[in-house]
Image (cartoon, rainbow, N blue to C red; front, side, top):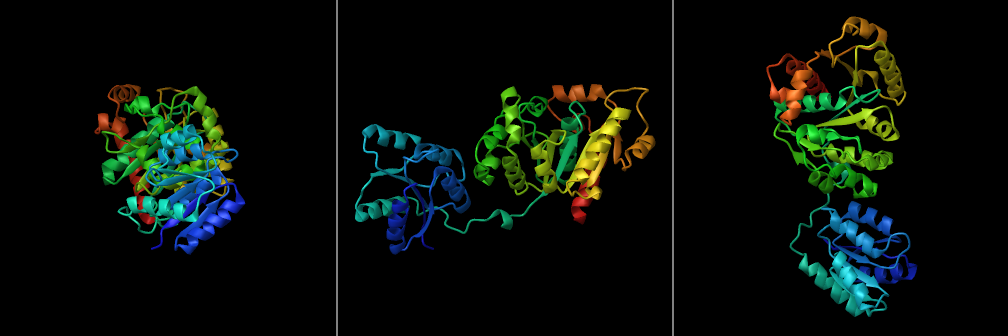
Length: 387
């Protein structure tokens, strides 16, 4: 197979002339006229070599190189910086950010060809098989958990259901917390790395590669893999990166048979984008009149996103013991939608589980609440089998 070379340069003449020269040498050539476009092509096509200009508007070649080197999917692709900059400091900067070689414009075609050949020869031992596209990858079963407002126990329920699914199946299960700047999962489960989601959201959607997502997951003692949100308040702004969230869900679904998403509360734009990507959605509510009313509104809004009502389940999470809580049958009537199960109030258990940095189902597997989480997991597993 002919080697694939990506040229990133804002100069049209350079793209045309260098591209023609390389094509005559038998290389497959693609081109991008700016940095962001070049990143997209690099992550999608995974070329064997990148020929990169330094002086480009908006995003220069140094920044492009930094991003390519930071992403596991493109970290090993050789980069030849091809630029009109001749100062020694410019070349040093190029090498410092990760360039493999450096040529100044103008250069003789023979010299360029020699540098290209040398760089490709250094990496000839790497795997040159066809790249597996997202459409060719096998996708797992994605379940989104959310509520009308914060403090309803969404994270706790999602974590315990994820652990329960692993308990039942021993298949790969990923638990991802999608609440940037408001994360609690890292503290609850003792996950030290809480920067993975933020790093993924800060770049371009094209930078959300399978390899980068995989590197952002942390293994937990319960058997599941975890992506925890940052608790830095400044990261709340990252919730606006709907395109990144979409790409992330797609990538996560290729890494595990079951993917459990903690979507937090409400229907921000990214949740509206993510919900259609889920195989099913589980709403968490309390047995209180206002919670039931708000959940009914949320249910109607989700159905308005052209989501099949049959793929939406409701869990009644009675977190505290109270005489004011409405019984399941009455809550179900008021909601106008079936309730999958009721979680018994047991704050002492969840406090113990938090101290142990593990889901409650692992802390006390024989407990009544653990059995209730297993019931939710069993229903999800049956639907996954039937899809």
